[in-house]
Image (cartoon, rainbow, N blue to C red):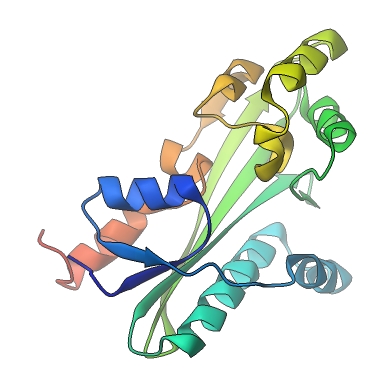
Length: 199
């Protein structure tokens, strides 16, 4: 099924989600200057939702240009804290700062996916989840990072909900797939409705 699907992402968890759903795929992770795109979107006062969508499309477009015959799925996830977009932390100190800013508050995770066929976008979706972090102490944050840094450095917000990061939260609203970085149900529904996979 979907043997010509290319995932334009190096995310191991996205690959596992798609394969667990029965899809066959290849990986082609593009080099995209995400920081420049984020800065340009911020300069235009773009919404976090539009930023996530633009990043996902940029990744899909770059890979689709190399493989115009294939279906290419580009994905990106943005953390929206009061309309400020947070990026993946590059240092342990930055991770600690993000966690301190998030504690006791509700933020949104926006998981965007864009599918290209024939080097053109044919489907897009931005899933939204709301997460409320417990008012954890500095001591808890430091101990958490002692155990989990640098592994959580590839996650916006410096947590992985599928691992110990779940202990940081008091409430989650939204499906787990979206929280983990891919609006999987909506993507599978699209493929099923058009007959690309059996329904």
